[in-house]
Image (cartoon, rainbow, N blue to C red):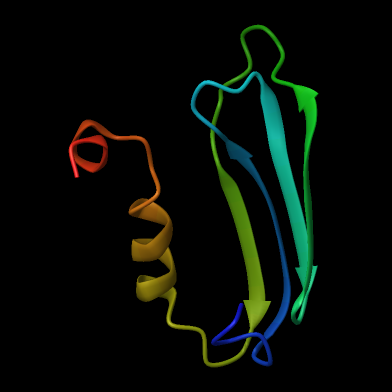
Length: 79
């Protein structure tokens, strides 16, 4: 957001944070960002991350790579 805030019209999503039973929900309009932990994942519900970005001049691959660096994978946890 710091670098592409003017080009990021809207973003929203739900993240599954390792070790946390609640959904992390965020939304932003340009550089105004809000987030919080919301309701708990339901039993049997797939814990996953869903991200939506609307904007211009967005480098999709760089954005994806940045989020993948935050994933709690064995490889990332060893860094």
